[in-house]
Image (cartoon, rainbow, N blue to C red; front, side):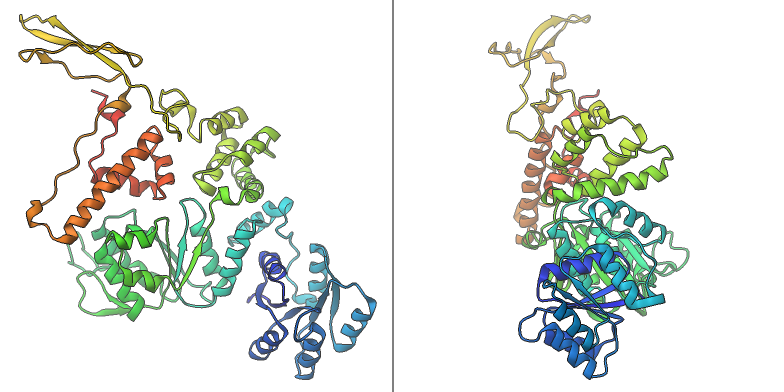
Amino acid sequence: MDRIAVLVVDDEEQVRTFLVELLGSSGYQVRCASSGSQALEMLAAGSFDVVLMDVMMPELSGLEVLRRYRASGGNAPVIVLSALSGAEDAMRAMKLGASDYLSKPFGNDELEDAMARALGSRAPTRQPVASAPQANAVAAQAEASGERVVISHSPSMRRVRALVERIADTDVPVLLLGESGTGKEVIAREIHARSNRRNRPFIKVNCAALPAELLESELFGHERGAFTGATAEKPGKFELADQGTIFLDEIGEMAIRLQAKLLQVLQDEEFFRVGGKKSVRVDSRVVVATNRELEREIELGNFREDLYYRLNVVAIRLPSLRERPEDVVPLTDHFLKKYGRQYMSGVAELPPEVLRAFTEYEWPGNVRELENMVRRLCVLKDATLVLDELRSGGRTPASAPSLPTSYGGDGDVDPPAPTLVRTPVPTVGGGVAVQVLEMPSRGNVPPAEVPANQVAAPVRYANPFDAPQPPPPPPSMPEAEMSLKDIGKRAAMLAEREAILAMLQRTAWNKRRAASKLRISYKALLYKIKECGIVDPRAAAEF
């Protein structure tokens, strides 16, 4: 059954955004007009089940639009909205053919009742709207029906949702930008759910989860015998998403060679399977997401400029959770409901001190970190553990490095370096070795000189974070033979290595926090650590 189409006509953007969010969460398909003339054009071009019309508008008033609409034969119910609660306006509206009249400001229940009266038996089942105390109820009903909703009340997320509504029925590519954990996949699913492709497949592919060779086969499929182990032909994700939507997460991690093939699909809507000789045509809407700054990646030679402009038809930047603190409480309520059902004896509500700590915390991991924290609270049922974790900067206290809390955090204070005092001691074979004494704090006593004919024992650092890093991996070819592009990539790798090392030291080698602050995915950071030859000093100290 198709959703009921509603046209909102109001010259105030805030009112339009509010009604789009309110009615959209109740299951209506909402479109907007910002003027009377635009409303008449949309009414003439399309079919709507209900019209919400503001009275006071420049140029054409709502009553004049209503008169012309009825004169042209339009018969959809029109609910007139006005900030002036005058009986005269209401009577005029009714005489011109309005089905109902609401005075601003009106309550959610008043609007629901007016919609029910206008639609009669066609009205959707009454459900709570997404007000702050009821956001969890809306989410629960949406999840029960298999529909995903965006829980938000901040102006920035309202703008995101309004833009999603505007571009959902188009087939243009969409580029989702924002830090890890901000809900890019949720928005991608929302775009699909509101589009005319909603009854077709939604296919997600994480470009950072597979190496380039496997990712190519995953996206475009392969023919039998294309490579070792290809015992049968396999359709790719693009074929599976035909007539639907394909969501490419972490697009910034895709290899340059595959970016060229993706560009071909966007331009020609066809591609070749791995090992294939015949082109395959597909009709898939492409939505991509990244936490990288693609303009910077283009400068570094890691991302194709032509692909960027092809994808950047509509770009939606999702704000971090610290930029929309008003969403912390409704999101917490939503996750409490969700995991309260999953873990039968879940937490009904948060203690005030936990809720206060939630609203004051910066959430570097964004909504994903908040969800994991609420889930942990439902499982452990111990608020003190969650409070301790928040105070430790989001790290689980049991697994935090054994450093003072003022070290390894986000400040500029470096942990004290150990003093290593080497003392020659005789060995069983008659030789001389060096004993290393580790002093707990920095001292002024210089270490003893080690004679050249003595063999030093391996140096153990009292604080493993002070262990020096091995040199970066050597280039694959002599520098004299490197092209300008190779030199640029080498310089970029060395710069990335220094930046990653600095952030790891600042976060006491908490890789998830470092990835969040560097605005890359956790898997991408692990890959970069390996590529740059970075060694975790805690692992190196275990010998």
